[in-house]
Length: 239
Image 1 (cartoon, one colour):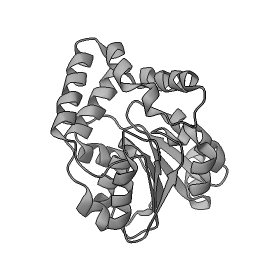
Image 2 (tube, rainbow, N blue to C red):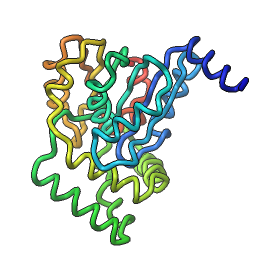
Image 3 (tube, rainbow, N blue to C red):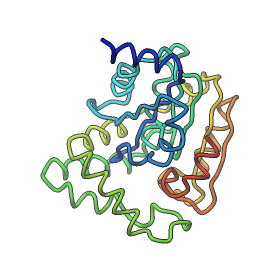
């Protein structure tokens, strides 16, 4: 009972900051941000899982958030999930940050590739799939020791595991265009991308900036897809 009262007290004293991880990522993708914010915010990390549609994942995520209002930081797939949460929250999201993400649906080619990776994973070839999903080219020029960082990313992927990976891939594969969803959001929004990101290119973020009336777009030079790890100080300052 006391622990329950303490939790309510914490929620009243601190705003809630919800971090939503990307595909094959766990809380470690936000390690620099959690260290930076945890003394001022009640921080919660959500790993997308448990459903094969973005809409169902969004509902599961919302069910896990106790605070009546909160701020959301979504990275990659987490950004896609955050966009899907907007029409479901009835104004609960105070501020929004969309990092290295994409508001548009998959191309036909990408849908075929995702389904192939899911089928390979379900056939017991998860480690082979990871060789395609985790590559040097996804990191920007700012990272000098790419092998060390890729090993960190691989550690997250192995912890997430094949079952949750398949959930994430199927949900991302079936997502719809989020243009109308994000146009309705009026809260302060940060849209952040890496100059070298080939997974979610900067142009997609500029397009989101044009759609969201109360948004700011920041491009971090020489940074790839994993901006939270590649340029933690720049990301923290932007947030």
